[in-house]
Length: 532
Image (cartoon, rainbow, N blue to C red; front, side):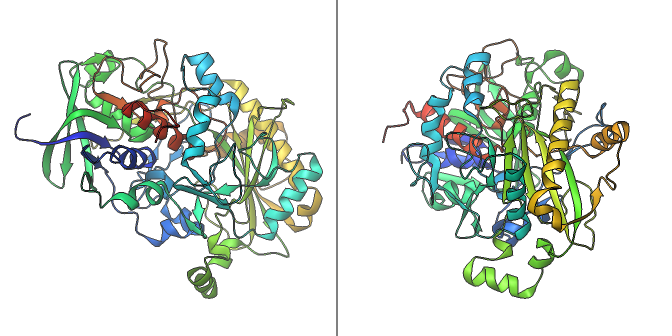
């Protein structure tokens, strides 16, 4: 590779994990880091104004992936992913959830991920967090990732929480505290009513460091491997093909779709599958692209009466003026400002259902009606079904084939159905009931069991939390070593993003991805969480 540019570390992907690593690794002024991002800038109003995030879905800032037709739903599923600096942290709903203690202890005990139990990862959550209300020992107050209470809650959100508590849930003002169960307001990754993405937290403050180079609109097409060592990457910058050398390591941070795709394009993956596409085998690693899963989700929507729709509010000219001058009002809302975690089995520590609610209509493929609405999304937190990611071809521009295999395990459908029924019951009673008019999705209340099941399958989407396709562990399907996140069989190559999670955490995945990158930075640098 003589003649190519050279850096110590080449980071592929400027999303949540890549931004953390770019910051932490360049704290040492002698370390030279190149960060490559396939998308462009995050400097658009839809990113910064919390309530406008739905406008980013299916825009140029979204990879816009879709699954193959799902056997058990008969539908294709939308898989939005951020294609810009900050990645999906620049287009998500900003909900700050870490997951459950049992999630991380399960990584350790069931997958051999020693060093990733709850007590091991908690210091990294705390180190990353800059919470405006909560403090130690479970929360951080000085970390770069700002976390605050929602500054605007619509009356429907408040009424729903009261209804959920009347139904039987406990009030919870800290879903990342001692107990995850209950109903209440979410905290969000915002600062003074403005989205605070991982790029805001970690990357933008350090772009002037002389040892950090950031290049956007640069899609990596291959990791270059000589013998058994990764030595650099090849990427496209416009029509030009560029090669860069990594003297220390290549760090893949492309997320649960792009990272396994790039590994396979580079000859690391299931040998028979790669041969079928004419790709030379570097390492036969059958787990690459396996274990794909997400949180299956069913939206429930009512028309409302005697109230407003937050999207209609947000379109009023005075609302934009309010946000611009005070960072408050409807535009400061993340829409789904409240929710709940509950167990359909009576488990007192581990929920299996998460609820988000919003005072507007939201569902994949839904044309927003011209009347005020209220939405609840019911998500299965611990799906058993597992799918696959496979190459469609050896062309890096060709999108991979995604199969989430939703409801392959019938127990998943049974559990989310119980969650949907519970959500309808709690929402149709208590203080919220007086605001609900007639149902929109499903469009009637008298669904019998067969019709109810058909509705659920047709309307199932996900919560946009794909994970697991380069899972850490010690078993035959493991892709990376838990002690280092190095790819098995390749020196100088690590994967650091949500793809290494062997099983999804119970909740939104951005905070766990930041934690993973914080811990990975210490693994790379040979540090411990308490080190300066």
